[in-house]
Image (tube, rainbow, N blue to C red; front, side, top):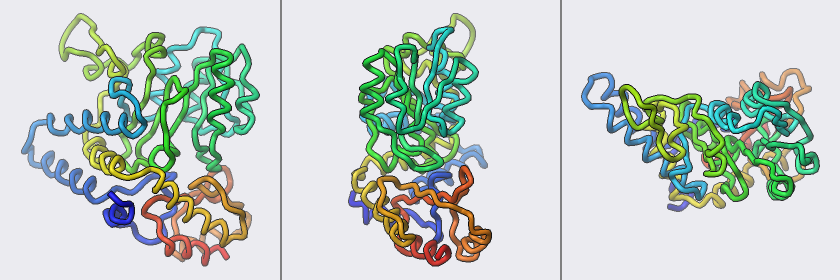
Length: 338
């Protein structure tokens, strides 16, 4: 499907520049979720059709990142996936993270191991033989900075260091693969535009051998009742019991994304982000997230009056641009800010 045709499936109110907080659903996802809610209201179906959407979503996410379906686990949050990954660490583990990393990829490590930090652009240089794992976001939440992925992977492999990526601010607009990664976690309610409550993880076979399914439940096992304890033989052993309606909305959105060219989405997003940067007298950038100084005291009020919705992160305005962003959205923000 061509991107221009697909964009007609979204109906944002002008001024939405906040996908880094949450993405907006396409019409097929909204309609299917509404149907499921109606079924729930009237008790007109079994739960199995909703659960089928978990299977459909898992396969679609695997396609999106080019991974085998059996290596994909489903959850509700990225932090829960990362917490289970942390069970693979030895008692004396040392984890290296960026010094501005979002806490969902910080706190799970902090309760399990010693945490070292480094600036995002110096992460590769900070990996040493003592580094058990390096954990980082492919795109930083606060600043939009892209990780120097190839440098990190090369340095990590030289020291047999595990590579753990959070793709929550990347999947959906930036081409993402599992090449060189031991694990990847992704909250799907941002750039993947799924309902909050759907999250996906890639767990490599060599990492799974070292992990413990500490959130074991009926969905991660092969039986609903009684002993013995039997896990699925693949990444499903680390599944969290799914929030069905979140996956009812996730499946059609992920299928739609797989019909599009991620490079086309990236080009569109960067065109909108760079139109915004240019209007503010900034040079072009490589991220769909733009971070701005917020020192002017009436900036929030000006944006609100213009109907522009952004976020404030780390004391700075954060604007984010996705496939449904238009030049009108950008120009509304520029007029309010300038």
